[in-house]
Length: 75
Image 1 (tube, rainbow, N blue to C red):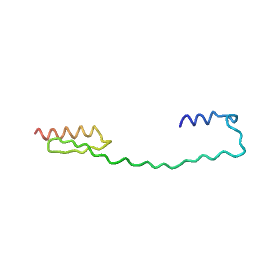
Image 2: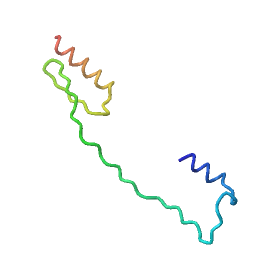
Image 3: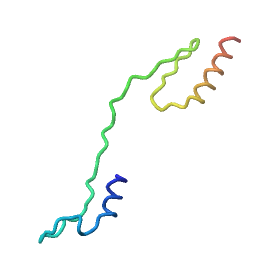
Image 4: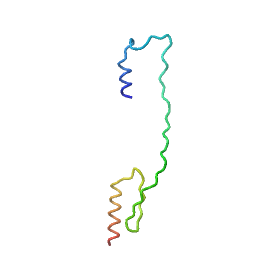
């Protein structure tokens, strides 16, 4: 998009063809983003505990939870 913005700003009137019809107005078209299909979670088992991980999980939080579970299992 940056290219076309640059191109439109650097264009001179002599760059375009002369026409008797006015140029069409610029407009934006709404865009709907489709949801990606639900993926199956990654299942992690630590002792008797089971953790389901989905895309976008917080790795730091997971690390803390696993350490806490490991302490409980070894006690």
